[in-house]
Length: 119
Image (tube, rainbow, N blue to C red; front, side, top):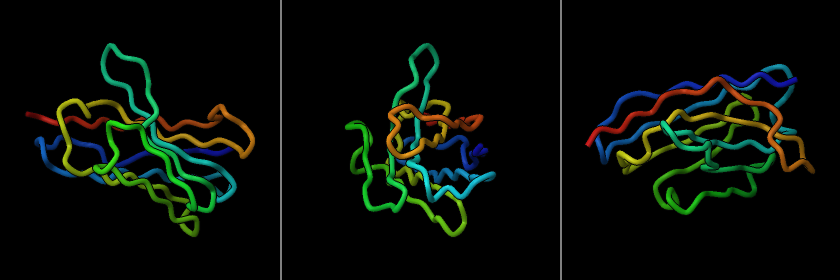
């Protein structure tokens, strides 16, 4: 079992920045693919960014490319999402998640952190 806890959400003006963190416990996070998802009111949860266990590969949905950066520190069992040039449409609850290599489905989820971008 892996427990995930997000932090760093908040209210920011359009064009501003936030850095989300995801702290993992229970098992070393270095063995898992990890990712960020978000869910806006009335919308389905969507994939935002993903990172391989060694951090050698990263993936982004098109709408955040060039603005968001995913990273991880396996020594600290922590993953980050640096969000720059934020837009009102980035407003959502952001979730971190983890999955074992070889699986497509994310197995473990955090409770979410709210990000609100005002115009």
